[in-house]
Image (cartoon, helix red, strand yellow):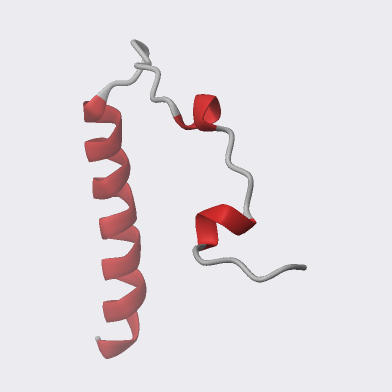
Length: 51
């Protein structure tokens, strides 16, 4: 390995892979529902033993 001035010089980055492509199938409400499920799960897990 040589000496590099920046991290980017050391790692070859494929800029085309970094491009954002919109995903029309994404539904934000699915994230909200998942957050509610996990919030309930962790709340029950944390407070279960505190009675």
